Image 1 (tube, rainbow, N blue to C red):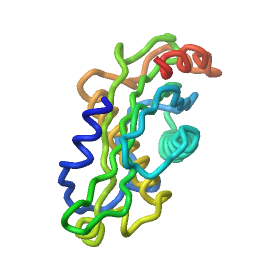
Image 2 (cartoon, rainbow, N blue to C red):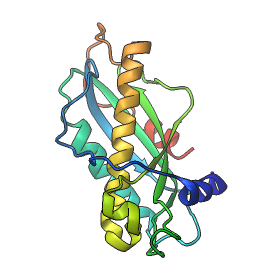
Image 3 (cartoon, rainbow, N blue to C red):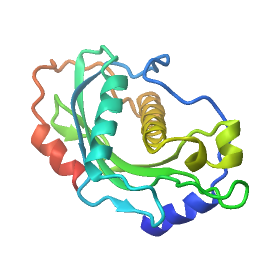
Image 4 (tube, rainbow, N blue to C red):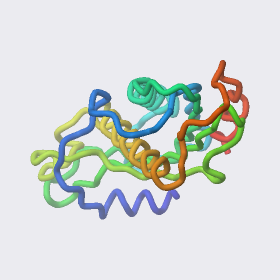
Length: 199
């Protein structure tokens, strides 16, 4: 993971596009309703040269962004997130057009079905995302045009977007979040979700 992130930060080419926001149109996630939203970072790795970010800062920003986005879904079946922050590179200032590494973030996610108290994905799903570029940041490097906090927010929101796209695909292809006859009640899987996230 560590070596892969370092290579991606140096070689990635990211097309300019609009950064996602929590207010974007919702996707089709069936009967999904967010229960527990647990983010941990016990083994997070930092690629050398990155702007410094404390593990708890990633926990806070990812928890907030996941909550802001997925709490908008109003289904009647509870599902829980267990996320682990694996590694990151937050691009510093560089020499424009010569050395402009890309910021990158890697996380793992497990989703739990509350009613059946089991994982939907047997193995944690890994997401590796880059911050969205603008014309300015593409040419000059985001380390020269954005604050550390802006870079982190962009990475967190892109991770949320990729997670949401994947969840919609699983809903359509695997039947995740389809309505079932089991009533949804108070979240019960917090301990299991926490354990899965820290694996």
